[in-house]
Image (cartoon, rainbow, N blue to C red):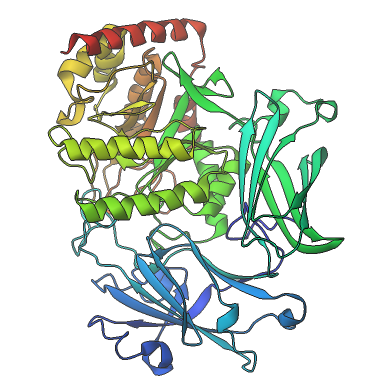
Length: 618
């Protein structure tokens, strides 16, 4: 079985699958009468054609209507693989993401309902299929209220025309749709947890049901064709757990040849086979990365060694397709461009990115801070909607070695009164602890940017316009103490009094935001503007060199990778063309090595100084 890099879920690949992208019937339901009038059984209603998975607001969809349309309907006729009923018994219909609420019917029978615009869902449609018909009919209704601020919406603007840092809306299907053919009992989920200290790879496999009779689960692990381990497990329940020893006698590689990092993105290929006797019941290709992440004495750690983070803010929008990716190739190129500019990671901003993007980050070596799209009000409904979807995000993306931190909330988005509202502070703490309860292998930042309550990294959003301000604020432990108590970048308290410093790394997780003055009269927006490419590079150099000079800082995230709509503060234009020579940007971004013993000592001093500041109650 060969790995298919075009699979919509590259970490969980079956050989038999059918892409359902392309032309679907489409209809707006502005009066919300489709359910009452039974549109699922009226093909004549679907008088427009949309190209899935591109949202109807985008040009690539063939619709390109950006007005408010809260309810949309899709229809697709499909033919199943010939002969599937003779040797396979179940058909699964997968949706990568549908914004925001979805219901799906097959041949008029409801097969799935899902709420959450960023996460996948699956329907077993077997019982709804009509074996007497050549074609089967899939209908989907999506409801996405454009002005509902309790809904996790990220950068999707709630007014009709985007402005400043907010973008066009995305309604309905915006990630791949596909079919898979499986047996009655099949592998539903795989979970990998590396244990570097013991040389183990912990594996959890969940089946869709308890097997009606005992089966066997075969596991084969390899690295670039080199055998690492093999195991066979008797399966009598729906869940299987096993710690697989990576046999030392088989591993003659050093850590650079087996551990995952941006410089050495080593991935362990896994073939998981469910067997009844010698007959294959199900087979899945997966992969895992051996790496650990954490923090100690003011430094971020990758594989137990200090590692300086050079991140860039990734909005994940494209001019012609909006939140949806133009293609798998475009996702790969996005990762390549980021690395070519010298960055070793991205902070995905207000979006849950396509699994295919995360695959290329895993495969090519790019660290990711996983962030959730936020709501804009605090209410019981907002808390419930967000928490439900965040749990699905953590479950979907747990296995990706590229993800090195979780960020539930950005700044005070959705929690606008953190400083004075105990309920909102409790919510942030609850999200932090909930995330750690489900994943204790990664740092978690409760809310990144300002008004820190709880988190494993102190991320500061500081849009200082030149390097002298950065050196003044972060050039020494004493400067940081003064900044925490007096400066308040972005006119916000960086940390709230109830938080105390425990040696967490301090990072500038949003900086820069420079725009290049447009040559024509188009709309533009940025935190600071350069008159030409030469001035742009000079500003970037001044800022990044100042950050790299500060021993108190253990990483940064530059705002941002690409222009997006009217927000023209990217290193690249919206079409991914560079504004400045990429090699010149790379030389500045990479800078000198930051894993120097002297810097670590200074960060110990920093941790002591900040702890003193916290204890003083200033």
